[in-house]
Length: 171
Image (cartoon, rainbow, N blue to C red):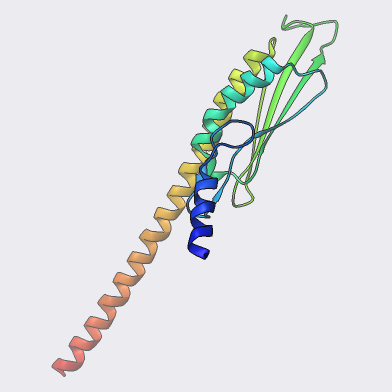
């Protein structure tokens, strides 16, 4: 019966989720870990904007889903700039901010400001992708460094023990 339950759990973990998107299955943990986006904003977010943000942020969240712990938070806001705009950027600032929580309590924040919310989301996606890739490569480098140092210490230990045992047999 437990084998049957595990098979059912396995089938369910690879099934579509309620929102219709395919769930990412994390085989290391044995559970379905879908990275979705939580929205907060200071204006009414349209369905088209939500769909666009889901589409754009879906790729980096799916690609680096094994590094993430939970949902990504997306903060969309429109701020009014002052009357004297020296840079001639317009009267409104469309700001998109993303917060991604990683598995080892690392938090990645990305921010983008533009004249258009869609352009802000595009820029935010690029920034978030770069940050997640940098974090992933940093983790890989740390792992490789640990392996390298452990192999060196094991090799040094083996050479010390063989030189000691060789000295004993000669003497």
